[in-house]
Length: 424
Image 1 (tube, rainbow, N blue to C red):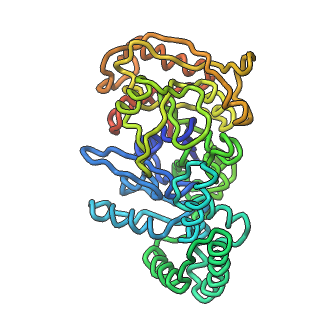
Image 2: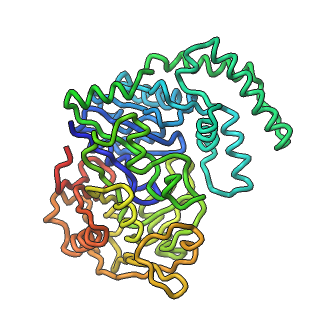
Image 3: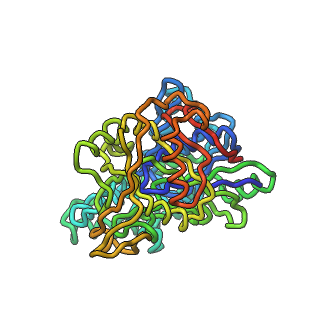
């Protein structure tokens, strides 16, 4: 009953889409367990590039079951748009399943997200994800199964949409929405996707009991987790490994391995402290060579050297069993590379990640410097054939975070992945 969780071990954008796509070839079922259209996974397939936001990356493998779990915030319009885009490119989506318990992003959620970010400056994607989860916790949100019971949904939605209109108009001075128009649009959208809707925890449970291989795909990263991330500059869900159990409806005793996806350097999108950020030509070099622009928003990512303090933290919080190191080829032309091994805060040496952004904002990185390999590794297919300096860099990462690597990506395509330990 092999169940593998794939998590981002930094601030997201680590290349989880590529790793999910690669491992999906060995899995039978791929499950997305949290987040919404605020996430973006880019997959290179032959000479094609696919940018996925809600649908699991495993959709590019026609024989695999792909699940959008109950922990996901589903924008019906966006998922229909994504399905249409895949159909136009000849991708069969009949293997997709959507949880009946998943929360639905409403038009007013997007408006509230936009308004709130003007003052809070969190740096959200303004896709309505935070307000959707807030309504879920407040027990005034809507799940997909609600929309399948039209009379019940009409009554409840009319009441709640009216409440949101009053909030928008009286508190924010913004125009409200046409409730009937929203209602009809949502009912039309649910009619398009209703055949995909099932009881996904039951489906996943049966797959595991039947001995099928299940890959649980997280969005965002450890440091964007609502509890364990750099609060308040975080997402509104649980990208960490524990979130897979809640967001997919599967008990922790079912899980076998947790793979942390680690970019060979560090990036961050949005606001908040970032100790190893490089505001110089090296940072710009990493951004351009690594194509560090958001899949969802197109925003340039902030770039810096690898932070091993973060990786140690991610290893502990997630219980990592393996690492998947990505974008190693981006460092090919560097004469030297640096790794942050600790922070200096007001004269004190910190080797563990601080529990508050107040401290993190004052941290100065302590680096070790290593020789670069200064050669193209993008066509290397075996670990032993990597330059010695590249292997030294990888093995230093393993030493600093206490987790062994299982996969090393030397480019964006499927065949640019070196396997050093079998996952499934």
